[in-house]
Length: 383
Image (cartoon, rainbow, N blue to C red; front, top):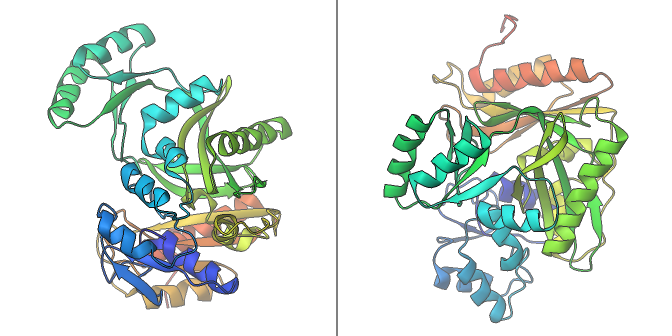
C-alpha cells in the first residue's frame, strides 16, 4: 500500500487476519502504518524509482491516498505491476474536472460546473447560476481544504485572481442547497463482483466529518437503493478495483454526487465492528481478487465518532484518556492512529453499536470528545 497513514495502518490489521503481509511505502518512519507494519520502505509517492523498488515482489499495489502521479502508475502497469485501482480509474478521484465530466456524460446527477481559467469564467458562471457559488481546486484538497465559497462577484474577483496566480487548476460549481450529506460505499473486484454497504449519513462540522450514522436515518428504501446502485455503476463503468466511496448531497430534488474516493474512506470506518466485513478487509479481498464478504450490519444502529485534536493540549495523556473513556463506555470500540496531536487533526475514531440511534450517537459524541479533550462534554466528573 502506497502511503503510511491510518488507512494503511488499519488495512495492515485486516491483512493479518487473511494471512497476508502488507508492505507499506511511508514518507516517514513515524507514519501511523510505519509504526506497526513489519515491511516498510521509506520513500515518496512522487518518486518513480522509489515506487519501482517498492513494487518489486508485490502481488498487487494499492493506495491509502490518491496523490500518486498517473504517469508513474502507468509506468508501473506497463512493467507488469498489478495496480489497483488502475490509473485510468484513479484519475477520476484525482481530478474533479475529469470526474464531473465523466459522471455528467454517464447521466448521473452532478451540480452545474465549469472549468476556471480566468476571473471572467467565474463571473459568468455566477451570473448564470446565482451567488453564492463554490470554487474548488481540481486536484488535491480534502476535509474542507481547497474549497472556497464565493458570495459576491467582488469576493470572486479577489479570491480567483490570487489562486490563478498560484497556478492551481480550478473549477466552479453551483452551491447545492442540501438537506444533509450521505455516503454510498461499495467495493469491486477485478472479476467484476460488487458489494455495497448500507447508505450512511455523514455529519460535518467546518468541512470535517465528525460523525457517521449507519444506516442513514429516515432514508427511504428507494433512496438507499438509488445511492447503492449509482455507486456500483460508477465502480463498474470506471473499472474501480477496491473500495469506492461516493460522497453525496441529499437535496429536495434528490441525490447529487459531490466527491469520489477510491480507497478505504472515513465514512466507512464504522464497518470495523458494525459490518460483517470491514472496508479494510474488503479492500484487501478486492485487490487480491478474493470473493467479497458480506456487508450486512451487525447491529441495528452504528455510529462512528471522529477524534479530532483539541484546540489546546489536554492535561492528561492519551492513554489516561482512553482509560477513563473505557471506564464510562466499556462497549465503545476505540481506534487510535498513533499520530501526534494538533488542533483539528484526525487522531482516531470511536465506534458504538446499539439499538437506539439517538442514544449511541450521544455516547459516540461524548467518547470521541473525551479522547480528544480529556474532559466530558456533559460535565461528568473525571475521577
